[in-house]
Amino acid sequence: MTASTKIPAPSIRAQEVQPFRAMVFGEKADEMNARGEDVIKLCLGEPDFGAPATVRAAMQQLMDGRPLPYTAAKGLPQLRRAISAFYAERHHVDVSPSRIIITMGGSTALQLAIAATVNPGDEVIAADPSYPCNRELVKSFGGTVVDVPTTAQSRYHLDEKMVAEAWSDHTRAVMITSPSNPTGTSIPFQTLDEICRFTAARNAWTIVDETYLDLADTTSEGTRVRSVLSCDPRAITVNSFSKYFGMTGWRLGWMVVPEELVPAIDNLATNYFLCAPTPVQYAALQCFTPESYEVCDARREEFRARRTVVVEGLERIGLHLPVVPDGAFYAYFDVSSTGLDAWTFCERALTEAHVALTPGRDFGESTADTHVRLSYAASREKLTEALRRLGEFVRSLQQD
Image (tube, rainbow, N blue to C red; front, side, top):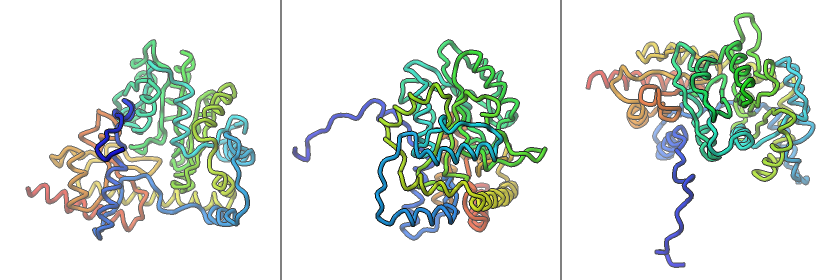
């Protein structure tokens, strides 16, 4: 083959897939940092803590040359039992280990959920704004996402009325992320229950991403935000070790599915990725200990302190935050007052203020040009400095 020989065109799917712009801005920030430019990255949802010490120690011990063969596609039985006990202890929900599937991160769990439920021509209802990769996954399996614009009044979440108005004969599923990425807001439990009942009555699926559930604030009664499984055992739920346990690069997650769906998910998982990494699964057993819970709960409190820094800082700058987040570690603020669209704001904030953010274009159409996501997974010191830089940047816009 000569250098001039053309290769075939990639698939239509590959040509049409949209970039995950948070990663694009992250890569640009890395390039600038590599050149010696001090860029503060607030574009990615990546906690800066790392895994709990006991998990790291377990991984080190596992790397002693012992054989680490494949596990079953569903994952280590002891890890599935540990997650079952986690639901019982922390969320007061009875989840059989047989319904738990270990995956290569929450992203693979989402992929499996869509692959197992969506046929070509099916429609999936989702909030706008919402996590962008869900749209691409649905499209990859021949489905169509029906984006429903939401507002600050609904805390950027769907409700039963919105779902009913978007429903059609082709609706196959409703996808919800709570707490939300990009807004950091939780859906009221009663609203979630109403949507689940509405969907179940129409023999469709409810898919709920609970990746940030254990980072959510406690309720006004002092209790934890409830899992969807406490109102709808037939819901498909997705979770991850990345956020609460701080294990983003470890690529480990899980999903809970109805018993009837387990064989199909098992077959899909075997064909897609065979199994999650064996040493990571063994090390993750140390997540479910009193020591790790204490560490991770302290980190959740630290995220609340970081949120205060961000909320107060945005207010000082004059960047409007329509809804204060109550979970995850994101603030979704409005840049309309600056006279810039969100994409231009993020580009200029990166090049002029050396702060990496994510434009609303990643998360849907309704807030694509007006809103920007800030991740406060960075330290308070970095957040304070980033907000100082953004303040100077916004003031410079007012002087133009």
